[in-house]
Image (cartoon, rainbow, N blue to C red; front, side, top):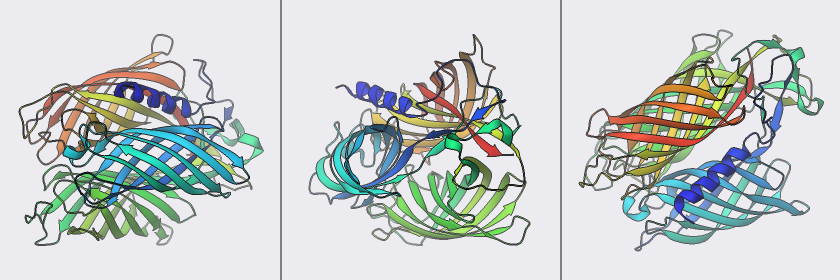
Length: 521
């Protein structure tokens, strides 16, 4: 099967997996009666010990996927894989995942699936970046988790990596509650308008979304992967999600990429646990966090990629929904030379999302609103990107995931990640971007909407001429709604490096999914 057909198949699985029970009529629901709907799903964490070519040390590959149950048998979703052991620190792959699973005996499950993604680290080993990972496995289930073994085959078809192995899976159920897309925007309503599934009680889970800037002050005299001293300050931009599991305790995940200070290509993904320790009743808080994850690239010697970071922050309130946080910490790679004192500044948006509770919960307000979201899974094409080390400027294909937060019916804010899967030694090239956008009212019986956005962020790898990593990307395009929830997107733009020669047209084509979350006003 051709690579683009594999991507088409997996993108289709992802589209149908999300909000599979959403009404397919193009008549939008009103606010007189809102049904909070349940989308079952689960997080999957996995580990593979991948054999590398040419006598290179094995790479420990950790996967993190969110998978929605389309039916009790079929699931689909998105995920990322990253190196944590070996010598390939900085190897990351973003993609789509789908499969089937079934309980064949009490507490025992069988599973089979396929991941298709783009990314990599050392382009000579991963070629254009396309990674295929079929797997079959068996799991034992408890009420709160499923744990088991799998057989997987990791392949970079245009590179050198081919490996089969026995690995580990951990599935943690996490249902998602949403309402159908609301065309009218963030309209207020009260509790009497909201109907919960199976007669449950309304509850809210706190989530914090943050945009961040970071400085990594590297230890003096440390060396890069080439053995040269590379100990300057790394400046990064990124984003963080905090999801509260108790009133004050939360798990968090953070990703960031370098835009200045080293050769382009460094990025990391970290996650862990934190605690929000309030200082009185005015919103100030001390926030300790402990995390681990993967990182590398840009010549940074992170060993196999495994990183550890304790951090302590001070949170300061701005408004009811916004606050700032200043944090300091220490980041190091136990198996590499990388050591750095970290300083992080964040602008945080608080969003309490409705969920279902088995018992009544009392709240001080009975007014709520709807936050609109749009998830986009895109194929991105750079038409003639400039390179550093050779004369070729052949096109590059990337898989991109973008989340749009609909601030008003006409204003949105975007978060995008993309990784290359096809091109001349482009494996390992990736970008992370964010920025504002504007869109028109829906036209032609609510099918068509024009939009424009300006994304800024970081990129690196694949010998693309980005220098320190800073990039900007203005885009214009069209959304076409097939149903109120599912649609198509087509857009064109120009990607330009702030400090180097990259200046290429690009084309985006893909699928969109729209939905709303119920939030406390």
